[in-house]
Length: 110
Image (cartoon, rainbow, N blue to C red):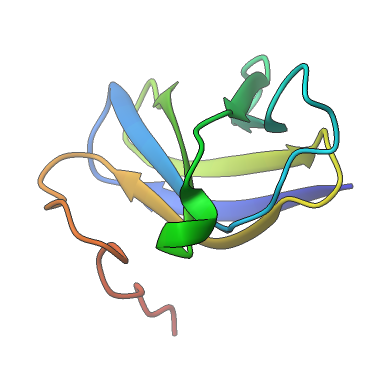
C-alpha cells in the first residue's frame, strides 16, 4: 500500500520531513517499524523507528531529509514496509518550523 500527496514548495534544496505516528510496538525485535518515503521520482528511503518510550508520550516520530531539487509542484510518496504503522500528521519543514509537541497547525487547501 502507498500514499501520494501533491505538494507545492517555494524553495529548492533539502527539506526535513517529520511523520507523527500513533505509537505502536514493532512486530519484529530485529528492527523498528519502517516505512519508505520519496519525493517525485527519487529512490525511496527506508525510515525506521527504534526509540523506546513513545507509548508513554502518546506519539511516535519518524524523521528524514528529502531533496526537493527545485521549487514548485512535487509528489510526496509513502509506502508501507511494516504493518501497524499509522501516520497521524506529516510535517514538511522547508525552514522555520519551531519545535513543538504536535507540530504546526494544518495547512488548509481550498
